[in-house]
Length: 393
Image (cartoon, rainbow, N blue to C red; front, side, top):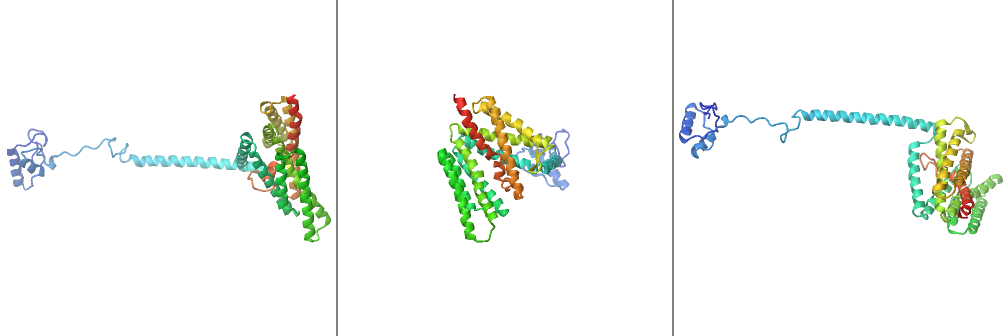
């Protein structure tokens, strides 16, 4: 029990432990009046109610501090939160520093590859994967969808080839080239082979006659040598892009032709990848410095190895052929792909350009990706006609 001043009484028990009686409450009230201090509200209330608690606020001991785990307190106390924020900020700064360092190293390495190959390797890989997924998906699931893929590639290839020729001073009629090119490439799938050949000759004749008529109407005094070159180029565009691409669709129309298309293009890609990797790692001796200075014999050796391995695997696992047929497929397709690559390099060097266009970052133009594939279509179709009867027999 405590008096009005809050000090313990003789019993030593704090106020509020034992209820006050009426007499004790009256004495406490009298003592407060004598001392001049008002009675606590609890004391007056307890005197009027017969005494329930009787303890004054002055006698209530201070509340003990809340434990560290109590609600409303941080686990580490008031000073723990600033320390945690400092730690998190330091960890975030360290992570950002490591990311910036890794990015700088990657950019330096990528820049070295660009200087050596002239290509953005990472971007080229991403675009190649995306195009490859569309290509493989169209052949595996519904091969007719490959018609859209092939038609788009031919139209874009003809357009960028015609534009590059016009920039160099040649006269090329773009619209007739696109229309006749689309007809030629689709005829390879929908028409018989003899009718397809007729359409090819008609397409060449149309673009040649169109160029002659337009030149006659122009009356610009163009020299006969330039006119003849324009006419030959008009026919060459149709034979180089739409006709060779149409042979791929002729192959696609055959029984199981989609697997042959997939296989020969996979061999071309394997040869290109093997040449790129080997040339980048070991290339020292130029293969054709006047045509393509960056092609090396070491790269060609890598292309030979990659194309033969790919040819054997695809022949045995996908086409149902003998392994030695796969070796022949790999070597023949490698030869046509290399000839197509060097041939397009000669055309670009004659035009004074590095790439046909910049539509595919890291690759150049559409025709820069088709340069090895287009001549290989004729080789693949010939090998199909050669090996399929042997396997059937």
